[in-house]
Length: 115
Length: 115
DNA sequence: CTTTCATATGAATAATTGTTCATATGTTTC
DNA sequence: GAAACATATGAACAATTATTCATATGAAAG
Image 1 (cartoon, each protein chain N blue to C red):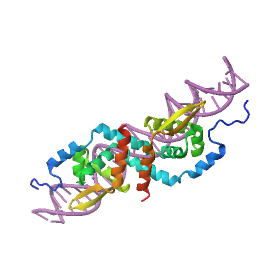
Image 2: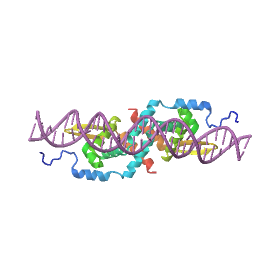
Image 3: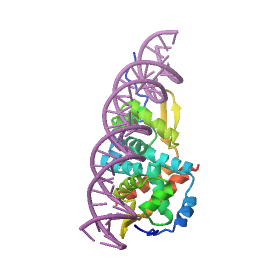
Image 4: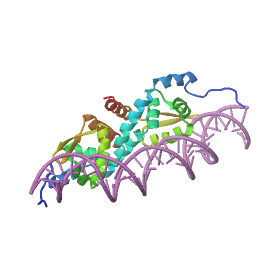
């Protein structure tokens, strides 16, 4: 039988201190939620098509060889995450990137994967 | 009945041109795969704990109130994605962030969510 | 070499999620 | 107002995945 012993690098008190340094659960949840949106091939592809020009739903679907329905579903998720915005033009909805974070986040991701 | 008509913003030929500008499928898949790793609350939390100091598995588990098994499973995914690295110290495995992309990607993500 | 401690891993389960199909909403044209 | 077109949306199904439980590996201590 062992007596009390502590092989940990951190002292037991340190754990408590580190725990307090963590951001609130809600913030970390929102953060992971954002990345989850980027974490799907279809959505990444959609975002990429919008890098160059704004496009309507049908164009995106054709470009990616996907159904209109599937693209529309995914656009909704991208809208909710404020990654794309849209305007109406007659019967069509024209989608475009919402802000420059999209570009920079994807660029950073590429830097990592390309290593 | 309508005659042939084209309401699209893009000309039919443009679609083909845009299609060629898209990166290869594999690159986009790897990219979404990377973000999928960030897209889980547990893994984001683990990464965050490693922002301040390197830690062993048990410390991380205590810090986050999770089981050792669950943390270990997630660490494996983070290892595979080259987001964390580790060294052995006796019986313990000491984990730390693998490169600075982790910090910058998370920082960018926070910028977006905090808006 | 047996026990203990720290971590890893495999299988099973539960929950989440992307796509499809059918249909609804909304706009334009006649 | 009816028909045609563009997009959105709800339900169902299939696939992916995070956690748990049990157990395996591997190191240190006696």
